[in-house]
Length: 147
Image 1 (cartoon, rainbow, N blue to C red):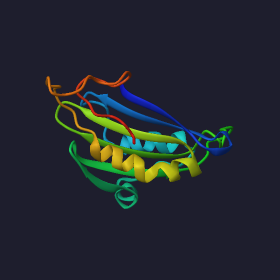
Image 2: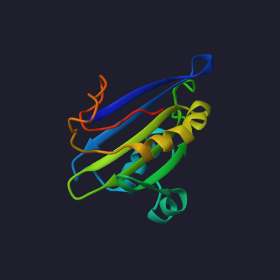
Image 3: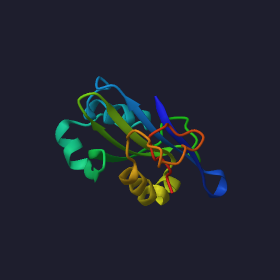
Image 4: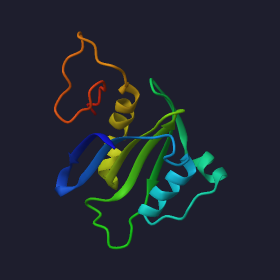
């Protein structure tokens, strides 16, 4: 499921996790997934209208991505490791792709621009003989470096 995963370390032992996940087309709709992330941060579910007001669209080589920025700290969570999710997703006929940055709220905010640039640079395809070998931990045929 995870095609790429990165750990982000910040000041004062703050942390965040970046993931790129590819699932089949039946991975749920945008609203269902956003509400799952809302719940993970102790926030109430959104209606379709609230989601429309809260989300943005990002044009990428993978198509139009819906991007959300959710803040909240679930009960008992460590604020050095949790408090904000920035996520993007798109569904095609045969797949759903998710990009997610989750961790300390300030660190996630500081990484937001680079994260969105990374999302805009990822492409899926078949590697050719001209393509360099994928780095360890990256799926063949993807370019998935957050920097």
